[in-house]
Length: 507
Image 1 (tube, rainbow, N blue to C red):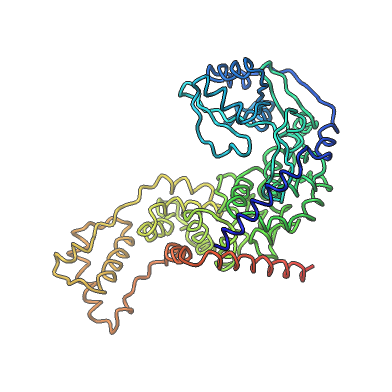
Image 2 (cartoon, rainbow, N blue to C red):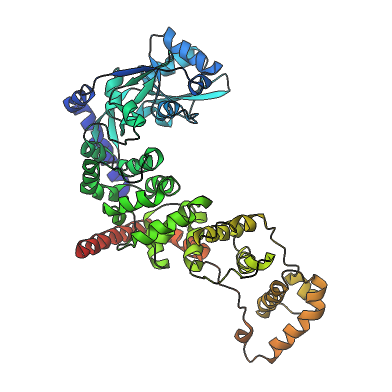
């Protein structure tokens, strides 16, 4: 009930502000007029390829109803870079109600109404292609995460609310690009800048801090050519990241870690004191981190393979995982990397097919609890810099252990605590044979010696399996799911505060 009351209070507050600010703020209007409009005519294969019959039908519909329609944002940026855009967003002078009206009259199906309150309508033309069209808008009131928007008719005003100049571009269907904030020149020079004042843009949505670094890694020509005014704005507003959800943070951080210049970009991020709000505990050896990124970049590692270098132990990793919200697969991978990364003698010295034997054994031990264990151990090879060997493990077909508990029962062995011990001992023998011993050999030749060894031991623990421990993520995270959500959020807040204190003391 407390959370419900808070939600109602926030909703009522925003409705009040939306009523109070019944016109576009003067600051936004000034910002929209602070640049001279630049236009550029294009006719490239990338541009022509997106004009499908379905899009042509959509263009005609908006034109017949006297509404302007343009391609907006990232798709325009990609076309200018001669990249085929994957996602194409559209901006229009029509309001959501007007769009619904013309789509209904044209018998065009409407789908996914979730974005309507923000001005976005999604339609499906000819039951073949979806189009996401958003009304031009400005952010009237923001709180660093959410915004109250106002619909407008001016593309310059819409451009003024966007984060980066290279994303504030529009393209009409005569092939004319509209640039209100010098984004074409910034893109040409691989320069990443906020629209207008970076402090204001960041304070409108603090996630733009990470978006800046993501686009820097993607577009910049050099790894360290940031504008100091931008870095200053980021440092002074980094605390706002504390209010951003773990899901949104991870979505950006994952792309940064898997992108270009991952080492230098993440280093620059952490030097702006961002890490303490991401669950990354200070201090961090950034020189070693950059070397790690350089060592494994050719193998195209996953984000976790890059980021786990920042954590010295499982406890620090768990602190990070409390702040982030990502899949159990990523959690298991991260824990495996931290658990086994320092085993430096796993690669055998001979050049035979057995040089990966220890890694294969690790897969055999872990695949029982994780079907994707081979992929995770492959990431371990990438982490350790074995760039020439990971593909060999990728191609290896995991052999099946030929013995089951039912086979032991047929041999007259009663079910009980010794079952697992006997199976593990037989599996160790099978692994030592390079997975070649057959069911018959294990049951007829090896089982008697295992049973004799078991009968001669004073306790069952004397014959316990020597298999490496599997990462305990499954049970741990099932337990975490049962914990009280508010308690976990409180722990994450305490962690952030402790990190801030630690950082302050180190300064």
